[in-house]
Image (tube, rainbow, N blue to C red):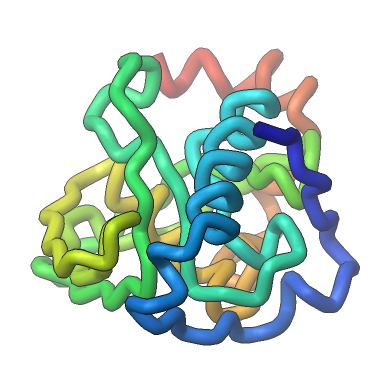
Length: 175
């Protein structure tokens, strides 16, 4: 496995809509290696999600830790061609960061209860119901597949902060 280069804000790949994958592509050994490399890259950079465009692959796929507890040691989920449906109208603002925008955090409104229809790493249909933090992660990563960065979802730039200041002044609010 390999650690992949992560595209940073400003690279055009982050603003392009990813192409949907065919089931026949998913089972190909090179695609399976990409999945494994993305999981390893996500862990290497202490991320909770990583989308294809972030590693210069213009496809509709992401890997993410979708357990309710992001620190749990559960395996990463592989989500291909996701379709998200909000299950409740309520949104909540929460802190987000991004491996493609290192050392920056901001408050982003997201739906708190969603359904995700997708394919798994074997090309099988799956449907997940996600709430709270896992729902936030899935929406953030799906945005990457549409060329959207978390800045684009912020309702105000007032909360925009560097990670160091987030840790000093805001992280204690999350406890």
